[in-house]
Structure formats: structure tokens, C-alpha cells
Length: 268
Ligand SMILES: Cc1cc2nc3c(=O)[nH]c(=O)nc-3n(C[C@H](O)[C@H](O)[C@H](O)COP(=O)(O)OP(=O)(O)OC[C@H]3O[C@@H](n4cnc5c(N)ncnc54)[C@H](O)[C@@H]3O)c2cc1C
Ligand code: FES
Image (tube, rainbow, N blue to C red; front, side, top):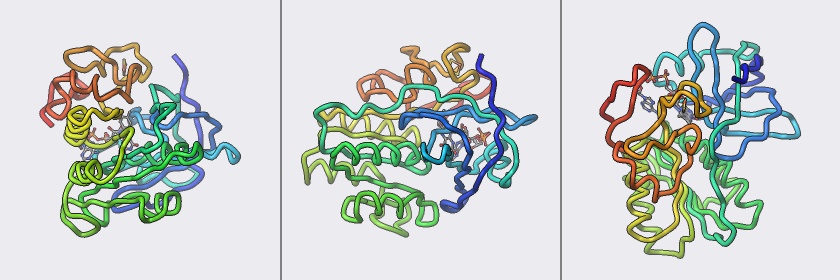
């Protein structure tokens, strides 16, 4: 097994309420959608999507939402503190050869990997509409980064409470987009229920779609089997985290339950 490389945190950026980006001086080529395993010695090791990648500077960013013991600890770390990193792992997004009209649908920190994908898609001449969803205005991540990249006309904001953009869910905006324009391909990352809904809508409309699924991971590279999903046995860390909506349709646990550290099933 690859040993974690110990690195000092080179910078920290507040992205939104309870959400920060941790920057690490680390030369790594990660495809949008791939993830790294981040180790805090004495605490735990958890997967995080790469949200920024600056090859020239040799720096990557990981965007962290503080929701539990590990992420709270990571969010409280300071510049100069040491963490361990290994990866990148997993299957990233596939831009597809003939897909020009793309839609990215991101919920919460799920926009991390999608923003990197949007950057790559724009550099390859694709047209991108980005649906950025959050619980509230204060929890919106990357709105300025996406506006700068795509122009404000290509950013659609949705919030559950209506404090910014359209009041409603990412899926409401997606359905409206399908009525308004041609869409070749959809990419989604966010909470499980959102992924299940996006994948179902795309399957119903016969539109190619990839979703990035999140499951509890231990090894991160296909060995331990902890991240297998019912009933098809795809390993989220190896065959995923990015899978097609056709594969997503076969996963009975998507949007319904997941396995925690002890392997016990927990309702979502
Ligand atoms: C491929 C992959 C990529 C990931 N990328 C990121 C990333 O870019 N940024 C990031 O912050 N995390 C990411 N995660 C999740 C991350 O690995 C941890 O699971 C997360 O930080 C929570 O760990 P914890 O120990 O702090 O909390 P836990 O003890 O695991 O969770 C605490 C509580 O919060 C709930 N919870 C967990 N996640 C969320 C959430 N997102 N919103 C609301 N409640 C939640 C849990 O159900 C639990 O009740 C990713 C996971 C995977 C598999
Ligand atoms: S985390 Fe070990 S196989 Fe996926």
C-alpha cells in the first residue's frame, strides 16, 4: 500500500459557512472527480475530492465541510500544520468526445470536483451550464469562481430556503433546463438523494449522465471491499466514485442507506 506523504498546509481559504479549502504544496495530476485519502495522524484517514489543481505552482486544494469529528478537526487546522496524503484514486468524470452542451449539477461541497471539470470542459470548447445548489446563501461555494469561468448567465443558483437564486432543488432547475435547451450530458455530485433524483431524471429523458457517489472508504483503492454498493458490488473507490446513471439505477442503496465505519447499514 502507498504510504501517505506528509505535507504542511500551505494555505486556507474560507469558501462559505462551515466550508473551507485547505491548500497543499503537492505535485499531483488528478482528473476531475478523483479523490485523495487525507490522513490526520492520530485521528483518521478520509477521502476528499480534489477541488483545485495548480500544476505550475505544484499545489492542490481540498474543500472541507465541517460535519463531524474528522472534518471539524481538519477545518480547525492552521497553515504549517502537517497532514498525510495519498492518491489520487478512483475513476474521474469522462467528458465524452461529441458532447458539447454540458450541465454540471452540484449540491454543497459536491461542486468541488465539478468546478474542476467545468474548467477542463471550457478549455476544450464545451458550453457549460452550472447548477449550484445549497441549503442557503451562506452555504454556497464557488459562486464567484464559476461566474468568472462561465459568465453569470451560465450559473443557476438554487437554495432550499430561497435566500439566493431559485427557491428549490438542483433537480427543479435541471428539469427546467431540459425544457429550455439541448443538453448532451449531465454531471452530478452532491448528497445521495440528489444524485438518485438527477440520475432518474436523466435516465427518463435519455440523457447521458455521470454521478459521483460517496461511500465510507477505508483503503481507497479497491482492496478492502468496504465501499461496495448493493446489490451490484461496484467499489465506490475503484469502479467509482464517478459512475454512469445506468449503473446508478441498479444501486438499490443510492438515496436510501449507506454503510458506516463498522459496516452497519444506516438510513440516509
Ligand atoms: C469520494 C469521496 C469524496 C469526498 N469528498 C469530500 C469533499 O470534497 N469535501 C468534504 O467535506 N467531504 C468529502 N467527502 C466526505 C469525507 O470523506 C468525510 O466523510 C466527511 O468529511 C465527514 O467525516 P467526519 O468524520 O467529519 O464526519 P462523520 O462522523 O463521517 O459524519 C458526521 C455526521 O455528519 C453526517 N454527514 C456526513 N457528511 C455530511 C455532509 N456532507 N453533509 C451533512 N452531513 C453529513 C453523517 O451522516 C454523520 O451523521 C468525500 C467522500 C468520498 C467517498
Ligand atoms: S475503500 Fe477499500 S475497496 Fe473501496
